[in-house]
Image (cartoon, rainbow, N blue to C red; front, side):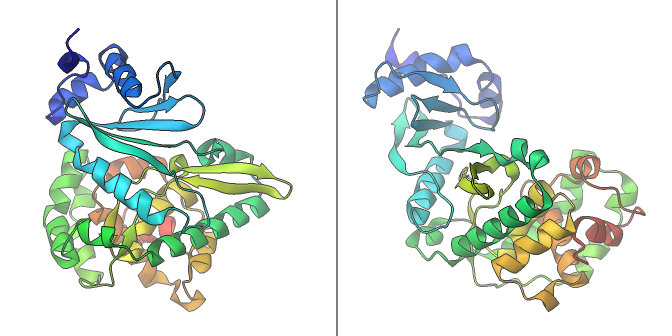
Length: 318
């Protein structure tokens, strides 16, 4: 088989969507790439979750593939991983190799140890959840303190322009996602009433800090964070933007957990007020991957169908 046919073309979203779930199209190319990387004969096991193809290679490494349509994400992820290596209180993957193979980008990285927080969380006690929330807050504070030239290469270049563009398209994006008219009609007034800083000190943002992207290991004193991964959607911008995913996919409406994350991060207790909750919801609406209909199905139901009630139900810190 000619080498150029080992990995299928994926230079558009449509082409990529057509091949990403078909293992028979990807495996020959992945095997050839591993051979090129000196990993001849290594066992390959594809992880089920994730928007990009990711394989366990042997027992100690992970190979992540980026189709041409998402090729820049390989540079983002590898650059950010190198910038944060050894600088956070929770491990992040070491980068072992970066390159391009038959039109696909790739990053070969260290495999972190531990179980997904998603599977462990239901088995944790309130005390253990408090500890994990505190560790997460400290890890995010360290992440946001990282200063590295990689920040200058991340988007958006202008946070104020990004907010304006997200605001302008917000109603249409939520409508396409299936949000009903009673909710859609509230969005412009809510966003106009919530002031967001257009020129904050930009920090390094993971943007998708969720239980699926956190690993934990057991210790003599309960569970502890042992890994944070999936940095390809990293951005630079306002620190509060980070807590959209934390609130939706870690705390999941649990005010005690969210408060612990925020105070461990460094928020003053008197800053945990209604206005902060409203800003978190505003950033939720403006988030790159925002899907309010999905969140409404997954998160606690508000007592009434208003965005103010939603801010309290999901982000309330009392």
